Amino acid sequence: MDMGGIIDRDYLEEVTNRWLVEDLYNQIIFGEWEIVVQNYRNNYNLFRNHELNKLGETALHLIVSHGPENIVEDLVQIISQKSSIEEVLTKKNNQGNNPLHLAAATGSLRKCICIAEAYPSLGNARNQMGESPLFLAALHGKTDIFVCLFHICSKYLDESYYRRNAGETILHCAIKRECWDLAYRILLQHETLVTSVDEHGILPLNLIADKPAAFRSGCHLGWWNEIMYHCIPVDDVLKPIDPGQMIKRCKGKLSPHFPENYKTCVNFYRLLGKMARDVFTKGKALNKGRKADVEKGSNVIPDQSKDSKHQGPQARSEGQKLHLIQRYSRACYDIAVFVYTAILVIVGVGSDELKKIKEKHVLSLRVLKRTIKALPINYYILEKGQNPGRILFLQEPTVDEVIDMDIGSSSKDKFPMAIHDDTDEGKNIALLVVDNRQPQIHQLLLKRELLTETMLQKLDKDGNNALHLAAKLWISSSSKEDELMKKETSILAAARNGITEIVEEILSKCSMSIHDEMDEGKNIALLAVENRQPTIYQLLLKRGLLTETMLQKLDKDGNNALHLAAKLGINKP
Image (cartoon, rainbow, N blue to C red; front, side, top):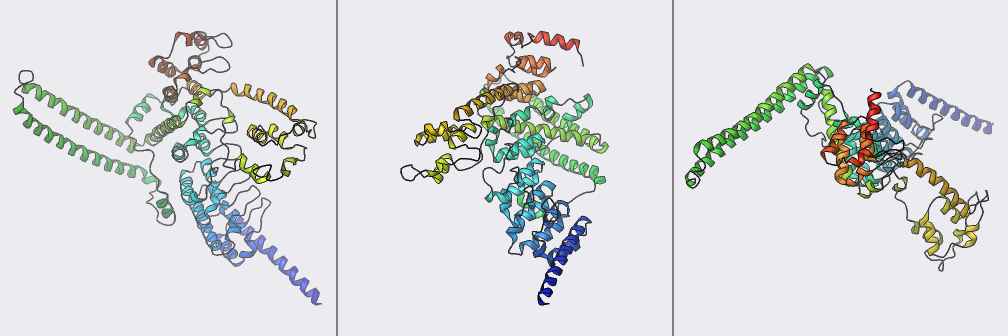
């Protein structure tokens, strides 16, 4: 009976726990958040790492993904008071995402701040795709989250947080989403990323060259919008972000927020304030200029006896008048721009949208210039379709360090038993080196006299030795190189898309890029004609780079620039 009583108590406890878990899951599903927090606090040991669904997600995972920000803060506060904080916050679901990964994916800054401050080393954790929480912030274009997480977790970040397994970096992600402010901040922190390529061998500059709408030359506006575009003032588009202040603001000190229907009034009053400051500043400058002119005139007149024959008082007065006219005309222009902008703000005729477009153009140009400045010149010379061999590898132990850890620093000091290890496929270290294109390992083994003829003649389960594998690699690499050669270089892609800013910057850095060609035999002049890009054609003429030889160049179909232009005349859009 005692035994039976014990069994009954255990069974009753199991049933109770199962009921509590199911009840918590239902409360999360139906959004009963206050009850969820209370139950989590009362049954912390039961819920802390209990997986509630088939994705391996705990209550914290689900609440971070679907719950309000204040509820996530309450749960993190409860967890922070426990000794098991590391166990709970580092728990990953089946996709390898911890709570900070999920918070970054939701785009909630408050969630990210509270979790990262509770356990900052989470910023360096990777999911199954090799993505860190900062990478996910860049992937979703969340500049504020990226800046704050970098501020909180910087001490725990290694050199590879900015890249995922496939090779794509945070700079690739920011450019793909056209988050130019984030891309520029990334370049300030990691300028070397301009030389990194993704799994397809694509440089960040190649991605920029495929974004024509991000530049003024690739954005076609109507005549009215063209006038509005030039009249809309754009201040410093890269506004400074203080992560410390942003974190404090998220914790309760919120900035003033105006309802959407007050937006026009707020913008107008801000514009009035800006104009008042500008007029006051220019007025002071004009008064100072007048006083300086008067003082200068009084000081100069007595000493002009030598020049009196050549310059009389009438000439001096005309010069002063011209100077004043220039100053007043500038002030009148500023006032006219203010009045025009004020009308646009009051009427609301697309001014906000055009301002965003103009800010995007300014930012993208900054990113372009910094990218080209940081990119070594040999990348323009050797860039024939993006060579994936330029991938920057993750920060890992060097080859020598790995070999030293396994077989010792010298074969004389320690018997290298590890050199005879085989994989399940029957491949030894020599075959793996060849199969995975690792010449540095091959050279190291030769240097240490560890590479024997027997090792190279070893057959794997498919009957291949080192020579067979090398031959297969040569065949596959040749086909990949042929495929890569079909891709465009950055300057050719920019010419095809009509982005004069990129073409001009690349030519300023490396004039040899003018001779780039596609595998079809088309150079920059032929691409400009074929894709109806007169701005590129005019740019080349202006710089004196458009030669007769370039226009007479024949592509693989035997067409020169005149042939392509004639075809366009037949097939008008």
